[in-house]
Image (cartoon, rainbow over the protein chains, first blue to last red):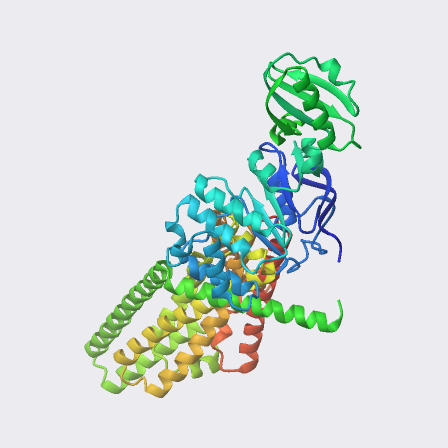
Length: 302
Length: 305
């Protein structure tokens, strides 16, 4: 068994003349919560759909939980998926539909699994509700519940919190956090704050190509820079660059000091040294944050 | 893949098919659409039955009147009526003697209604199942299924659902026709009615399964249910045209072979008492059904969902 839950190598997907995904390669380690990031049309959903076996790659190799997702029946029991824009079939009660799907997944106690999954997303009350009568948020949570049934080793979630109210979105995020370490989770989302909070690593896609992939620490530069919010006092950046391991210091606007340091240095030591120097210079500090926001990094890349 | 893996794989596929069939059948039976379509087809069959019943009854009355006017006695009247009946039966069975003998006890209205309903059955099948696959592909609900079941299982499960619905529907319609015929023709005994009901039902099932498979194929080829339906009707028309042109070409025409490519060409022998004729006809329908299903699987297997 490979340590990787998902491995893409040179994956390309064409729809006629249009190239939706172009030569994308990255891998998702087992047990990680992995983000798929990118603007609209970046190829996130296409990549996601190829991982689920909905779409066949035009080129390249793709392995999901050690199998080729295009092999019939290969993903059964290995993957739970929340497709972004798949409509729940009409004419079903939510409970009956989930029980049917749990049975189809070969789960031993289908009804219990369906109830448990609905409970996880706070929708147990909707057991008897017809699928066509569900609100957008409820339908989303039902779709989320079907992906969680049977605790599959890999859960693929495309825009899991889109259209949900903040309370339910937080509940969904908690469900994802609870899976961390026990299951591999791939989350595709526009909400970068959410991904930063949830993910261990991510791939940033743009116009069908991979802009960058790596751990969240690598993407946000947590091991290479920090920001100091200045309350008052005068900061002289060249003085800071003379401190050990500091490679660059500059002001971003009037009150944010950005400090970069060497990859081998321990962040806590560099931060302490810089803060001590600032305090000695009479500068008052409001806060310190490591790295930069994922949003900033993504905006910089795209 | 070793032999035991293949067996497990096949068994798993069968299990999936049964789960899908069970769930989809329950949903279809409960849905208003199945009831509406059943009602529509029953009404259509009843209408055909009433029209044909009225026409045959009027024809009998007119003939009786004319024969009485010509001074014919009861015996000659009955003989004339029997001759007329044989003439119609001969027309319906292409003058096949053994078929005419086998169907001698069946009231002529039953045969006529059966022929008419059989002609329209493919259109009904298309209306019933045109969205069985495309109706799941277009809104992408198919994605919930294919992540937990093989595409072949989904296809077979859906096909079996439509087939089961049709088997039930055809039984209801045939039963109604035979009960009417029994009431209208006291000579038509219970044993003959039951036996012929079974034969007609079986013939209709064999006939319609090929068309259910054709509808499954059309539904698999297109994403949009409406397009599937239109394409299905176009194919039905093309098959009808091939059969008609093939027959019109006679025994020597260049296009005479066209009719062998149309399923409806083989409908005639489905009521044949000779097992060989029935077998050939049944095998032709089985071959069409298999071909259509394989095509449907090929289309669904190759497509992005």
